[in-house]
Length: 410
Image (tube, rainbow, N blue to C red; front, top):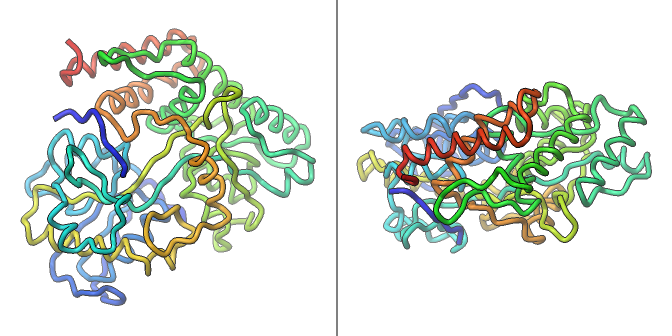
């Protein structure tokens, strides 16, 4: 089944970290079934899986490479994990392979505290429970902007102007940071900018459409921005940029809202109280913020017995309750009862209310293939081996090859 539409009604190392506990604290029941989870490794997931672990017999694997591990792990029989942490951009492979189960019966039994906008449906069935919304928005050093008399950039041209002023002042190592690591991250940064220029990824017949004026403009703007970044930007993922901020090395970045709370963690940040947030910059006047909206949430494996699925869902509900939110309010823009937006959420909220381009997120099979093709080929432009046009042509060729294999193109 190829999914064509899907509707939303501290720093971790990239390697896996496993936490196991048998303690029962605030959990409403004592779990006696072994439950394993696999999710991303940012702070919100740590808070959720810690809360799940209070039920006992829960092992949580937090890994930024989760998206590459989940398809095979959930296809195993039995599945290697009962609970998966997913987003609208990573759930599609699991749906296409049929390795996650509908949740309507479990929602009816244990989901009394869920709100309607947490229920993610495909073809009328609940297939995931959303816990938070996320977007990349502008984070900036408030103190530096004030000292230099700078306004918060509203457009990417203004970002370039501010970066030049900051560089001339010599107050940080690099004016800008960006999540432009080769692969998934650089593809997502391109997606943001491409949509900001009004681009369309593929046509109605699933043929690719990125080798366009919008695609060229997106690459050219990204290249201009790199002049103000650490030269190693092709290894710069979200954790890298977060640490650059925390260590006082950069003054601006379009970074995930879920990373905002870490800026004010005195245990690891040298810039507590100094980082503000604003809506993601626009690429063209009158256009939307150059970013995308995402949700993160949980799915339950299909290839496990019903008793394990039942226990897994109950454990998940304990991880997604208001008590967890009260202890991790600043870690995400939660969709869970009890959330109070903090200062670092203001940029993400401003972005969301400015109606950023919708993209095909929630994800489609076509968009998943395009994202992979972009991640495979964009490096060639930034290393100087290909022109913008050659790079985008290579992306389209890669996409066509994948789409034919997937049965989307003849």
